[in-house]
Length: 178
Image (cartoon, rainbow, N blue to C red):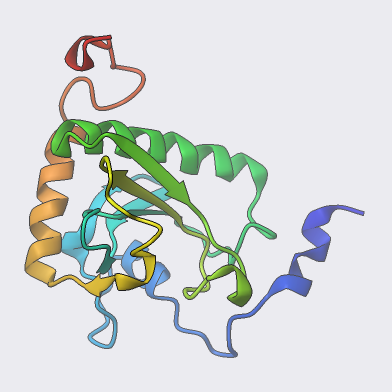
C-alpha cells in the first residue's frame, strides 16, 4: 500500500477551509488574511515563495515556500514536488545570504497541530540566522509585520534572486570568499 493512500488519515483542516496560500498562489488577496501579492518573491508553475506575514524579531525576513497545488502536509505531498520546493528554497537561501549577510539559514516545516502547523497547506520556512540570535529561545515572540515592511523585504530578496549568483546553478563561490 502506498503511503500516499494513508494521507487522508493525517488531515486536520476544518471543513470548508479557505486556504490563504492557495489564494496568494492564485494571485487573489483576501482582506481577512494578512498576506498580499506584494509578498511574493518567486513563482513558477509548481512553486511560490513569499515573505511570511509573521516574523521573528531578529530573523526577518522569514520566507515561505509553498507548492502551488494544495497539499495539506508532508503526508500527502508528492515526493517529486518536494525536490522542486527545495530547489526554490536553495535559491531563496542564496538570495538571503547575499541580501542580508546572514551567518546561516534554517529551514523548518511543521505538520499537524502538535507539530506546530497552523496553516493547512504544506509550507517550508527559509529563515536567515545570525550569530547569537537566540532564535529558538525567542521562537514564540513572532509578530505580524506590516504589508509595507514585507513589500520592502520582498523587493530586496527579488533583487538578489534576479542577479547572477542567486542560485546554486549560477553560484561561483567568489562572493563569499570560497
